[in-house]
Image (cartoon, rainbow, N blue to C red; front, side, top):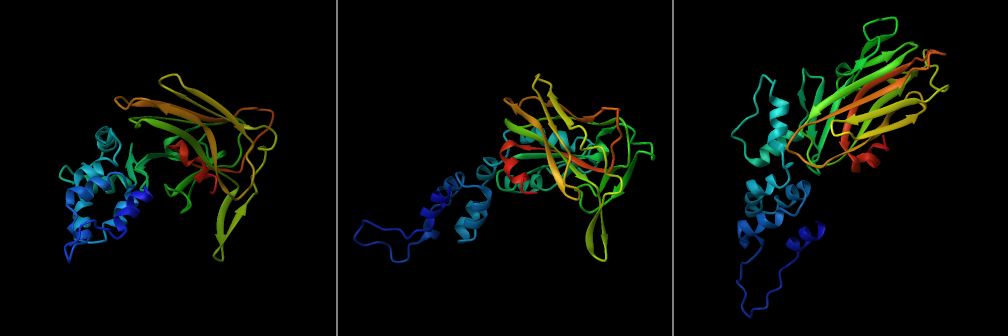
Length: 291
């Protein structure tokens, strides 16, 4: 794609003996420029649109941005906005549709949100702790809700102590064709601020070094995955990989179930923050390892 962009920026060499005196990039037909933009990624399109008016107008062509949207973006809009008080605008050009879907779009009572990755147009979905089934969540002896700006949803579930640890969830969604990975976003310990400095309280942390936590996923088309992991490194948010699944057709929704358990009742465990579950394209896995 970089090469596609660079050739437009290179000086044109004419083979004619008397080239037009004032010819330049602005003389390229708008339809020609737009046809090239189809092969660029969204960020390159935005950069090249600043060259001149012709390129800016070409970058607004519907067919350019429709090529960046998921093939089933209509089903995605229907799913996300079906219970939203504010209906999705019907008079938007495709560029504005793309921009609107790149914003966090909350649904299912605000417990889930979906967005398009700005650089690739791929679908990402996150489920808050409030949207998960947490064993014992209503008993304040075990769990509590904590407000924090370190969460996408501004609050997390904090485990003080429990014998039977289980956090389940599911989502029924029209995922576009592709490979996806599921992660639980967790932190051992409870973070807070003192005199403007972030500190971690490890008062309740115990039990996670005795047995690993088991992660599982299953899909409506019989895909399954299981992984295990010890929860370590207090004070750091970590994405714990549950597994991967593949969507081969985008005509129907896929139901995905996932769980996180540590149900060995020979010991208690505690001191854990549960923020959310993330479902994203599998190629983003390396990006998440940096967090």
